[in-house]
Amino acid sequence: MTARSRQQFPTSTSWRAKDSLLDNDSTTSKRRRLSSALRAMRADAGISTVALAERLGWSQSKVSKIENGRTRPSTEDVTAWCHAFKVKPAAARQLVDLAAQAYVEARGWRTSRQARYRKLNERASRVAMYMSQVVPGLFQTAEYTRRVFALYGIPERDQAAAVAARVDRQSVLYDDSKQFDAIITEAALRWQPGPRRVLLAQLDRILSVMTLDNVRVGVVPHGTEALTLPTNAFTLREFPDAEPLVTIETHTGEIAITDPDGIVTYTEVWARHEREAVHGNQAVAFIRTLMTELTNGGPVDHAREHRAS
Image (cartoon, rainbow, N blue to C red; front, side, top):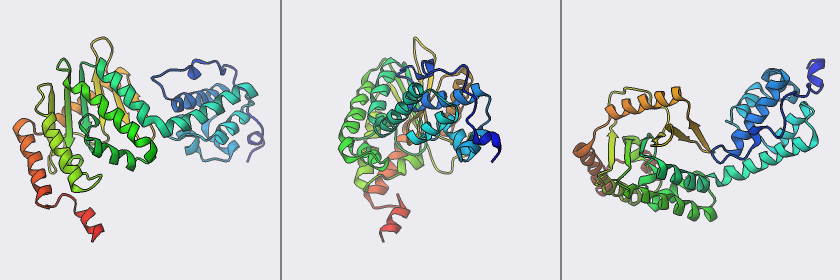
């Protein structure tokens, strides 16, 4: 370790705790605000991620992941980061408190996100969903939702509120002034978060939703020639009074995309997935075939049955 790396780095000249990065913004998670503040602190001091990692005894990838919001830093991590830049105690406490709040947010984000998504859907004129692994939340039955949240690790005591919030926001589907488009892969339709009866009820729910005039569902069967990479699920919302928004849910939070280039990219990706899908009567027939497999004990999930044997 170099002599410089043993010393504290110069204090950032432009970073302040009152910076807007720490302002309370309901559209930006505490974790993202924290990562932005830490990144600004390092950048303002003119220190590389490699040098900071060496000083803290971390890997460079850990520093980068914290700054990019991909890793939630612990309160101890934030304390060490602030110490490296000689941040004043009061400002450091604000950041440590923000780290603690981000931990609480990471535990309860599912319920809070349901309220946020409900507001977004109420404002939107169109909601376009691409789902590669699970059924869209707007279409989920309560039991399917409960099992999804359980698999996410949400404590049982918090599941009822999270499920109720998700089911409650589904009422927006019956507002015929809005358009809801969904592209669902066969893998998502076949994924089983519980017994076959749960999936059977879920597929029946999708068929029911598809009878609504303002809902259009496409299914991408296995074996379909790909027109784009199925990298991740996402939702594209269009608004009559604002620019479009793309949201991507992760295990610990959300990625929001608002920049024009990003919106164009996801709009194009959506269009390619839509061309991959079958719609209308073909989609209905496909889902009914899956339901027949479930009812007759067909090969919906060989892996699950193999593990049970």
